[in-house]
Image 1 (cartoon, rainbow, N blue to C red):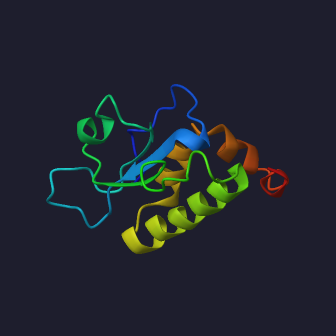
Image 2 (image 1 turned 45 degrees about the horizontal axis):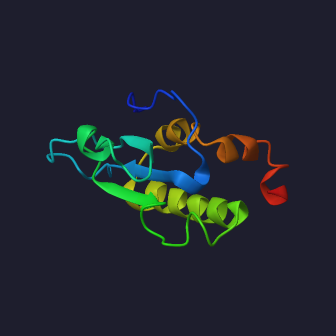
Length: 118
């Protein structure tokens, strides 16, 4: 089931991105299971609440996410989190990929050649 929340409207740099999602186990919560969205941090417009997204990671969780790590380190952390979200929470990879497309660094890494050059 592909998420319909993720219509990329503008780029969100990795350093300011917050990945928000619902586990596939969140049925009965009133929120859409498997929904994923990248939100600009801080979430001053209340998008996590507006889209009923229950979990977040990225710029919201690590004090050094935006200033003390490199883009390469942030991409590595992001990919580890994506792996956890897909495996632990059973969120379809298609939903995660669609949401991540607003992050320029993610798009640049898709060729495989640029990831390690960041």
